[in-house]
Image (cartoon, rainbow, N blue to C red):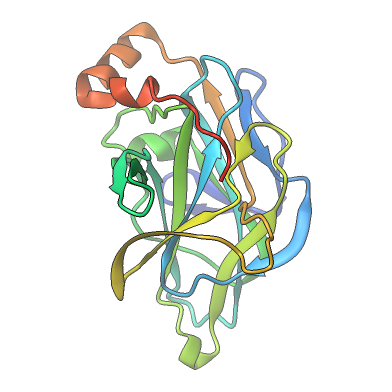
Length: 230
């Protein structure tokens, strides 16, 4: 399998591959391909996912698919994880992406019909100040494509899969448009579940790691309850 390095040891590979046996698969939306290509333009878009029940909440590997066409060579992507703890006025509830749990920073991507980006444990550490990425039962992962110029015929986006086979996902998606900043909850006008292809593996945090995370203000995140699908 050919691969290219991004960030530290995050690899771009041709598809969803083997998992390390010491890790637990807590979310998997890589089987039910809807054959739909979503082009978000320059907006940051996020998929709020629900992990399978269990104590494994320290992410050891995160994978997602993307596609890109007619690239000129300077295209980048940025990946973030958010707790859904910000106030969203239209629902009168704290459900919008808020606290950033992980930020990869921009990194280069290549033109492809379909590839998978793998963020391994070392890469996740690097994007979180050297700290493990501990998430609540439900969180939003987002991507934003950078330097993709539609006026030059360039395009990039995500693959839509649904339903997940491990864990669950809300059928709507979040959008943060840089031209009109602020998160908006959106749905597909044809009723198609907007679940982006991704897989999450995790391990149980060691007590000292968990204590460090809680000391940093994650206690309220880990204790957040689930809510029904939109």
